[in-house]
Image (cartoon, rainbow, N blue to C red; front, side):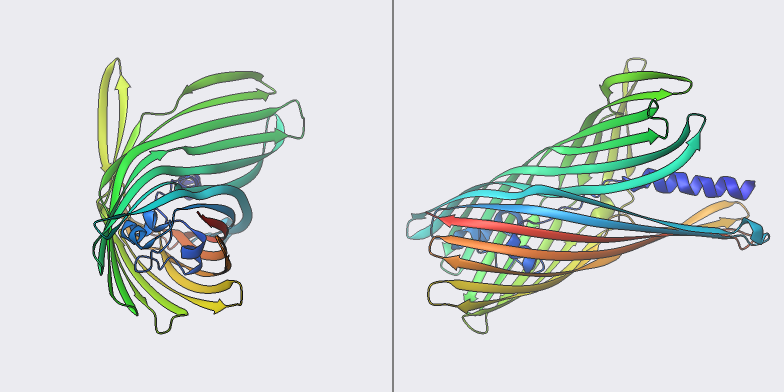
Length: 433
């Protein structure tokens, strides 16, 4: 029974982290995504506000753009327990879940002007910085009968982003963007029983707020080479929320009306620095390479609470891993008689904030080993530029595998593996005035 209790604890630990918020900020745009996100040294459309705002100075016409996102993610979980002394305790299992949703990825208005013969560009955008989406299902039996439950997590953190870029000299531009964080996420839990008179429904809504700034520089050394740098400055992000639930069991029914979620929480997000290189061997071909470092290991997590009318706060290290991401992409332009048809390919590493954890039992307790998790994503896309209109379509497939393990003194081992495969389709339209 001792081992069974620890294994059940592991299940509880994993379930509690199934909805851990992945707050890793993502860039926007179908064109950039089709190139694997290697856009810091390119940055020549409105989505530069999220990759490198200095690139806005390259735009010479007023424009409006919109990008839509369709996401479908499949989660596959497998678990295995091998008892070191009694094989009758051995067991294994697996399950699969999938989630899909549609969201606005990006919307912008851009106004370029001239100031002292230098390019000056103003922009305002609405962008999704963090996209949530997961689903879990479970079944069981209680006094009220057999039940099935679905837990769904949706939404995202968006930002209203005014930005400005200026051409310092013909070969160098700088830019600045401010991000006002809005929106949030919703968690719903719906349990249904064989007896339709019984049910359980829970809903939790989370609202995020904060203010951040990112800056960039772009140097065009010649017509074949440009180098960019981006800087996301540290900022604090807050989360508040509400929850409600209702239920009907054989033992009775009830409801809890809307209540404040557990204490307000804050994260101190780190400095994020990236650099990018764009090579143009020919007028039709662009090769792009990006590297970005994000110091998430220093992120602190604070929650505020009240006891008997006295307010308290507690701060922890968030336990995240710093990330290093590599991105590479290409774009080739096929020139038609009345239109241009770009084709894009890309690849990026996909480092995760949460580490893999292995617990090792010792004679005095437990110790934990953590390891970084990095997935990968392959991308592609194509478009059409005709007159004042530019259409783009991109596809991104990401793959990540995470493991969790417990090693016991008697050589018993519990392991769980989670495979996540995501499919993102982005479609965009740009209109030049």
